Amino acid sequence: MNKTIISLCLLLLGPSSILAQEATDATQRLRNQNAQFTERIIKVADNVYVAVGYSVSNVSMIVGDDGVVIIDTGLSLEDAERIAAEFRKLTDKPVKAIVFTHSHGDHTGGASAFLGDTRPQIWAHENFGSEANPLQAAGLTVQTARGARQAGFKLPPEQRINNGVAPVRYPKQVGRAFVTYNATKPTNFLEGERQTISIAGIELELVSSPGETNDQLFAWYPSGKVLFAGDNFYRSFPNLYAIRGTPNRSVRLWAESLEKLAAYDAEALVGGHTNPITGAGEVEQVLTDYHAAVQFIHDRTVEGMNKGLTPDELVEHVQLPEDFASKDYLQPFYGHPEWGVRTVFSEYLGWFDGNPSNLFRLSPKAEAERVAKLAGGADKLLESARAALASDDNQWAAQLADHLLAIDAGDNNAKQIKADALTKLASNMVNATARNYYLTVARELRE
Image 1 (spheres, rainbow, N blue to C red):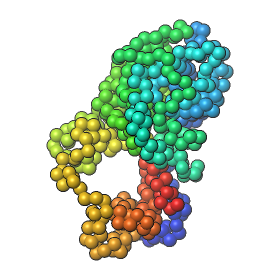
Image 2: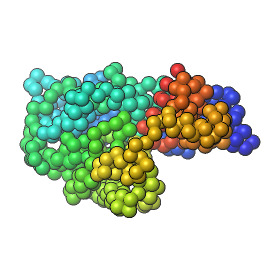
Image 3: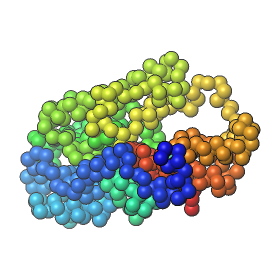
């Protein structure tokens, strides 16, 4: 039975049968990534422990003379309380300080679980909250809906595999994981490039490291030769642009921050998510590759921009070299090289791609009406969309459905075609955020 006939059968059987066909290579690779989220406490150096898998982000503890320092606190109070209980099995020393690597709620939401009778110092970058503050000031709320799609919060458990660098969670307040949300507010701030602090006999160097956020910092623990990288590193290609929508993430500065990390003689690297990297040689190799891959995306994109290439042309021009693309820690489980290319273009040149035809484009409806006319009418366009779906030309089917929906937003046939196309695209998508977004919008169209 050829692919076209199989696709037609799936369409007749309905979306549930399409979902049943998800045993693709991409889906299996994403399922294999779940091994990164097995709940465990990992000792990465003397007196340094990392809780992996208990929350969507890693929580670390450094044990000092008369107290401990906690680095990041997980998504929720419930997650953090479980981690705190595990840490108390190792030491009953009080928490003397908390360090936030950045302001995302999945790293700050569990802070209150680590508060004792005496309020600890809470350290953060002086720009803490710089990503969310302008969005809140503008009254922008669409990011909540887009964030829920990216994370798969509206999907049933059977449709969620993971979030690429994090296990599945359903926060009580949808959207709070993607804005600045603090159970406690920072009391101390890193000002300038770097600062050494000493707490409970623990010496830490805090270093400004803009990347995923402008308020990112990393912590260097010289006694154990451990780097706490925050979200500038995890075992996936980095999320140089978040599809939920976010203020600009400078790819150039992210690469510079990775170069700073690589300059340390570290024997353990703790990312914001996924299992730590241990062994001096392995840490050096990983950080060297990670920096080089991000730098390549930046430099190759700028090279293409100088040739006059548009963003759509650049994503074909900029292909990650196989030496990087084959690395298990640079697979596009969470971020994607194409999104990095587009964000580099946007950072330097903004929305205009240089093609004068795009200075004052037709509205989506006006363009769709003309495309339908070329096809011989809306009915012919619908036939083309169905044929594309039947032949597994799913991206084209989705785009043709968009034209039909621009003409008539209530066109149920077009909604069904787009929903089925997105579902089939999802089954072959290794990137968890794109997969979740596809499946969530497909459900919205059907419902």
